[in-house]
Length: 202
Image (cartoon, rainbow, N blue to C red; front, side):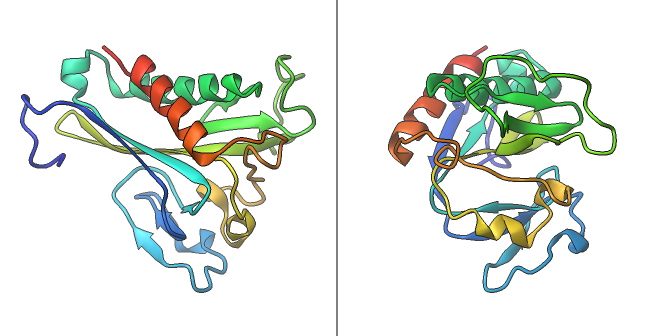
């Protein structure tokens, strides 16, 4: 769609759930795929490194003409992340950004706390005390976006242990279920879709 679309084509938001698959981004290194086993590894043209998609994860693909929307890529990324943060807030969870590491993270000691992270991050371990709950990987071609964001809802998280998620060895991955939020895939998809619709609007 992105390659064929013209300025007249309406924007769209695709929301889906994938069968188990690892996807490698353009910056992906084979060494970050530790032991894929029987899960296929697919090369993609999105940004970033390796991640896992599977049942129990809401994957959203915004197809946005940024020229028409009136904002640039950096703001687009910010708006997607803000949509996830607001989705988590709907479920009482506080989401955090980590500079230089796109995606959204939660405090492992108290994911429901509204307090800011305490103290400066350690350069040697910027993810200390955090778990990643949403991964972001995008591509922009001719000012039009594709690929997107994945929010972990209620997954089998074991496949994440077979990779260095997003290229970070030892990065802990969590989902809404493991931090104490009981919801359905449909409800999480509905909330995330609504938030993306609001925050990606021109």
